[in-house]
Length: 415
Image (tube, rainbow, N blue to C red; front, top):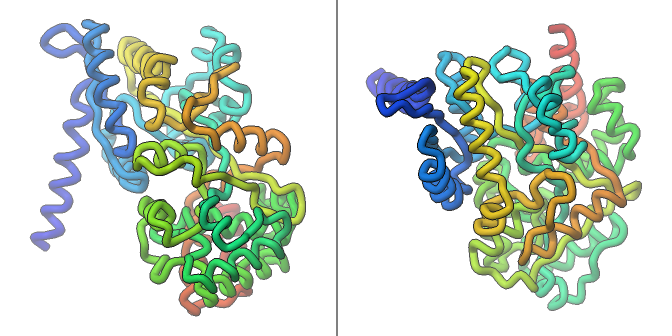
């Protein structure tokens, strides 16, 4: 009981003071609070310092969280009415929770009045829309590809897979030489999901996959069963790291960087990690997962959401900071801490990150689908995540996985 009370107090101490800024402080400044990812702290802190110095009428403060930490903290803050002035979020259902519950500032009219259609790419804006409302300030448009170690592939004479059969043979060759084929981690579910959704795309095809994600057709079908069957086969063959189901997804890159693993399904931020970790960029490249159809890439948007309670002065301060944070000077200076290119019209590709334009080009050619945890409402995504672990551990069959996901869909639809 004592530990439980301390945990609650810690959350309240963390969350409630963070929103106490807002309005005018004693110095007559408009103070706003920004919650964002800890992986970007090395850029955000100096950017805030520079912004505050250049804008004496505004003071920006920040708090930093892990990928899943910010999800949890925002949900706690939402339930207690203590959200900050602005916070990092994703598009789709993740950001949609805050819009659906009236917690985010509706930017639709602001965007029209300030010609955001000429500032931001149409794709990024569309992924930040929810029920006809613009729910956030677009900060990135991401596509995911299979990153691989070129040097490891070359060492074992593995060609870039062109078919799914090629991919399986590559995995078998890597495993035979003591290399983990695919680095993934099951804690929280979303990293393993990246592989599951590609298997579903492979067995179902693009049109059927889209129909399932839009809940137009059932998830309890042959293609989903085949996808989970193949996933279980990969688990049993040791194609993922030992103990991956309980591993932290933020650590998957370390296995690849150390040469213990050869592949990881990642987005454009991975080039930034390669730079940060002082890896040899020449050892890394990407390829589209050979789904046997269009070889589409999953895609998603990131954004900054603004509190619906913001005053006009606070909203103005937040947007001025976002414009500064994502200007050309800062994105070039701290390039490895951004998901580049920024979602602006005619945005420049990042220097020193050669895989980014390749992925963008591949997405343009092959097409994309919305990443599953943004396509699904939370309760359906949770059902998928639970089945990933259950099937891997032999606690559920592929048939049960398909049935349970569809049951979650039907439960959601009833509500």
